[in-house]
Each structure stands twice: as structure tokens, then as C-alpha cells.
Image (tube, rainbow, N blue to C red; front, side, top):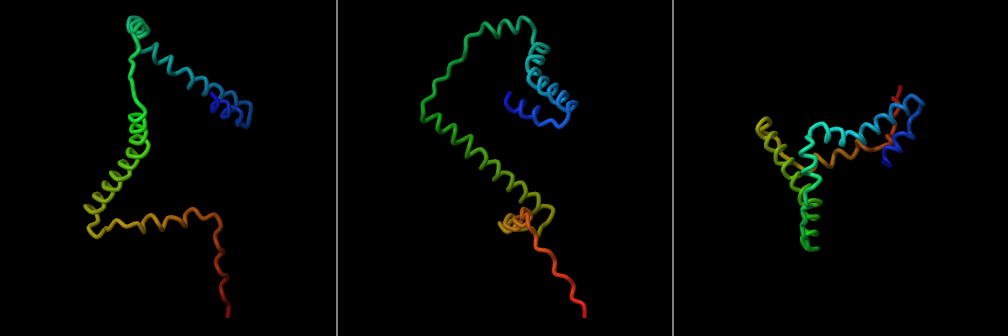
Length: 123
């Protein structure tokens, strides 16, 4: 709700504000619309009368799940991505070698200030 409000307030014109308001309302209500469109009355009544599923989890298990999702998952994604890149490059480019210099050389793309080129020397 907060982000929707920020999105609406940042509208530049009245027309844009109206359209952004309609977009935020659509996004807020689409879940209920889809739920009512794709579930029958019997299924909705069954879901509403169900007992909740209770899962007991200790602090150690909570910490492990957090670590697995926040650290191990992204690390595994990075390693698999690098392995796929390496495998694809070695199949199509036999001379390819994966090096950290590939990642180190990209720093100059983020520099804001560039030094102007030297003027030509006229003789």
C-alpha cells in the first residue's frame, strides 16, 4: 500500500495520476478476482472451514533455514551460473579461460567522471 501511494504521488500530470491510481487498485484487487474466478463455491467453503496447519520450529532450525535461503541459495545460483557459462564458452570457444579479470575490468563502466581526451597537437 505504501509503495502504491508513492507511485501515485510521483505522477507528473492529473491524467497520469488517474491511470496510476487505477493500476494500483488493479494490482491490489487482482488476487481476490483470480481467487473468485478460479475456485468454486464448494472449494472456497472447504478452504475457509479447514483447520490451520501448525509447524513447530525451533530457533536452530529457523537459523538454518534463514542461512540456507539467504546465503547458500544465492551462492549455489552463482556457482551454477558460472559453471553453465564456463561449459557453454568452452564448447563454443575452445580457447576460453574463465578468469577473475573478466569481472575486475567492468569497474570502468560505472565511473561517472571521465577525463576528456587530450587536444590534438598541431605542428
